[in-house]
Image (cartoon, rainbow, N blue to C red; front, side, top):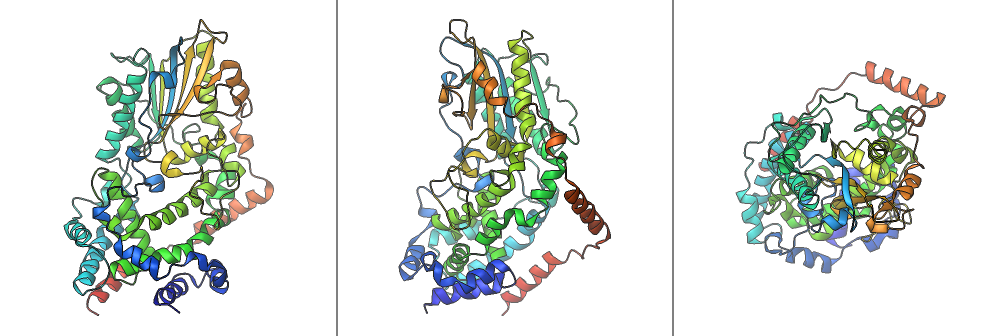
Length: 505
């Protein structure tokens, strides 16, 4: 048995032996020999040098910078048909690039410096396969002013993303979105979070030059339109609080392709790494890339393109079942946003005429479930742990990145047979809606009404109601949570202690 295969099997057993998924894969490993890599693959790994790569891999699932997800060809013609005039734009936007969660940020602060020391020491000891340029990147990395008070907040790069998005839309719709700003003509709304509020303000600056005169109404908490998933008990029980809902992701996480990534990264860096450590490196790679999208990210030196594609699929698979086509409730509950767009457009068609722009700022769950409700990016076959398809349509790197967005535009066409027209763009690219003959160019008003009538009326109370069994489950879970005493938060300190010990072994 090759050294690589031995290391790989040890990794699988050490990381995952307690899980059914790991036992399944360990007992049937020969079925998946195609996923292992041989000496030829080792050679390919050793030849890869991130710092010399003219086209590094930038697709990092929902932590992708909008710079690498957006289309660059948004024009007036994408939004408004020839001979028509834009009357209203309805735009829902995910917040821009943010800082990690408190737990992830704490690990960045406490563990990444230790990993940096271990990687450099391994290289000095003649271990690993890093090229000089990659070693220099790791050696030059600095933690900077990161601190836990920044957790989940918008970054400077995130504000720039949203500011640029608004400027692009204003250029494409100059007669509809113009200065000076008036609160009677435009409506802004964001969720109760710093990152969506600051995204809304950055957007206003990008579109109108300043946010000083813009009225931002106090956020609703809970918000049944922008965070409908928080007021949907059925979603909480069936998906969010149900580990079985993402079992395909769990199987992939503990499967041979992920084990191969851990092995490759360990060999490349000259270390013996756990799955958790590799995931931390991956988060470091993608967050630092999103924070400075035009600069190399030091932690990306750990991964080949293939590694990043496997890690990306792992994230996509989880989101497919949490917020995508994996479960019916995911898209059934997403009708409030579509209903809101329809009601705004109907008011214009019926002669009310205001506002000219409706701008909402929310989170990835809202965007991805709404896209699913609209039937966008649906694959012919469900995603599973066995079919990593590079041609799949469900790609959160492209459609669920930071600052991901969906815009509907209502246009008046007095010279056309159909007087009103609705177009859809996602990520600044024209998108076809099933049921509309116009395809990328959008829908006639009658087609649009027919499309959205499948989701309306949107009775979230009815959609999200629990049956008796689910009500009992929820009550039991609440009781368990109330009586369960939380363990002391020593995991981070324990991790630091283990790593400090390794430095002196």
